[in-house]
Image (cartoon, rainbow, N blue to C red; front, side, top):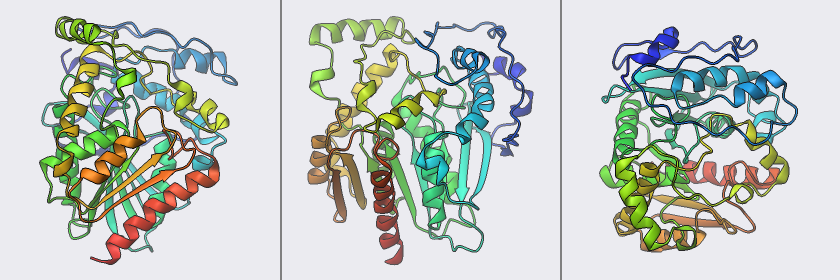
Length: 394
C-alpha cells in the first residue's frame, strides 16, 4: 500500500517527516463516527477481518457496529478510538477509577525513517514533583499503548517518572497493516529510533532511563538492550515472551508448511492460534472489560508475524547470557501464555549483577491489569519501588 493513500482520510494527521504535532482529542465529546463503509484505499490488499462473534454487552447498536469495523488500516483504528474514548473513561476498573489526578499527557504522531506515521504518548508528573527518570514502554502482541496502559502509566508518572510509549507499526494507532510484523528487527529499529529522541530531550538527558516491556514487549525490550547494552539504566520485564511453549507450537510437519506459506502469502491470517482468552485475566470482572480494548488485534496471527515471533524467541533464548542491564522480571506463577519457568531461566542465565525475579502466586498473564485490585496495586508498587531504589543510588 502506498503511504500517501490513506492520508486522504485523515487530514488532521498529515505531517512532514520527523515533525511532532500534538493531537487535540475532544475527550468529552468524541466526533461523530459514520457506520457506513469507507472505501478502502486504492492499490491496496485488504484482508477480511472476522467480525466479533458476539456484541459487546451494554453498548448501543451503533457502537457495536463501530467495534466490528475492519481495522486493517490506521485511519479506521483512529476513528474507532475516538468513538470509544468516553466509553473507556467510564469503565469500572481500578486503573480508570483510581487514576492519579494532575498527570500531564501529550499525544502526537511522527514519521519514522521508514516513512510510517507512528503514534506516541507521554505522561508526566505534576509540575511540583521532581522528575526522577524516564520510563519507555514496549507493549505486547496485538495490543496498544492506550487503554489499560493509560492507568498504569499514570500510576508510574505520579511517582515522579516521565513515561513514554509508542504503538508499533501495524498496531494501535500507528500506520501499517493491522497485526502484521514483516520483520521483528524492523520493529526493534523503530523502538530504538523513537526512544533515542526521547532520551536526549533537555529535561531527560541527564536523568536515568529505563525500558519497560510487557509480554511480546519484553522480547522487544531484550532485543533493544542487546543492541545498545550501555544505553539503559535498567530493564523491567513483565511476563516476557522469551520462548513459546512447546505444547502450543504446531508440529514439525505443520511448521514446514507454514514456513512455505509465509513466503507466498505472508499477510494471511492462518497461523495456528490456540484459544487462550480465559488465561490472560485471572479476575473475571476484568476479563469482561478486555473486550472494550477495541483496537487490539484478535484474529489468528498473520503467517509472517507468527514465523517472526518464533524466530525472535529462538534468538533471544540463545542470547540471554548477554543480558547485562539491571533487571526486574515480574511474572504470574500460573501464567499459561508465557511460561514463568522461562523467566526463571532468563533470571538465572542473565549476566546482570543487579537482577530480581518476582513470581506472583496464582497470577495469570496480565498481572498489570487482570488481577484483583490489591494484586494490581502490589505489582505497580513493586515496579515503582525498584525504580526508586535505582534512582536514589545514582
